[in-house]
Structures are given as C-alpha cells and as structure tokens.
Image (tube, rainbow, N blue to C red; front, side):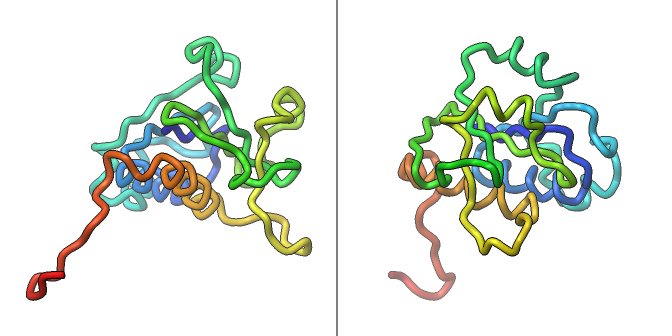
Length: 162
C-alpha cells in the first residue's frame, strides 16, 4: 500500500502517519511544499525510532508524482466524495491520498477523480478528522481487504498459551 500526503503542514501528523506506515509495511509519499522539514526533530519524535525505517518518497508537486507513477490507482480521501472508504476495493499497490490539514485536496485535483474519491462518514456538524487518524482508518480497511497479508496476526502473552 501507499499513503500519499499532499502538502502536509503539521509535523506531528506526518510523524504519526510515518509510524503507522512502518507498522503496516506501507510506503509514504509526500508532495511539496511541506509545512516542515522532514529532518525536523518533531517529525522524528512523533515517528519515534521508526522514522529511519520508513519507505518515504518526495515529489515537487502533484504533476511530479503523476510523472513518476503514471499507472497509479489513486483514492482521494475527502469530505466531498460520494463513496465511503469501505465501498471501494483496494489493491496492494493502490495510493490513498490525503490533503493538507487546513484545506484538504485541492478541488482542481479532486474533480479529476470522482469515482475514486472516498470519504469517512461522520456527523454533519464536524468538519473533518485529524489527518493521522483518517489515514489509519482508511489504511487499515485497505489492509483488511487484503487479509492483512504480510502482517503478524497473532500475539502471545508471556505466561499463557492460547
């Protein structure tokens, strides 16, 4: 799987998303401009000691991403979509794109992806969820659809055998 962040602004959100990506074997793609430096201490702190294990890619803009990933299937996470995130079928090489915290994905991009735009249902009085929470919700649904292949599915208590 691939998470694609369009112009993320808050380093702690990107750090948390990076940690989720490492935990799930997911690549993180970042489209500039970023609201921070990826070397910034707060990004690494939010990602804890996992940031160096992150498979991360940087792009100058959305067109640069498209040029480097010409056959990408992109699901656009937005409050403006007609489909929910659970109504689509993801493949292991899908990209799930999220916009910047203050404005989301620009409408000139969204208008090109009406059938792959997805939303997380929520109360109508709420503007949006925290970005790192939204990424986790949609990413884990996509992984569930793939039966969590390549992921550890069982845990073990130290002093008890199931």
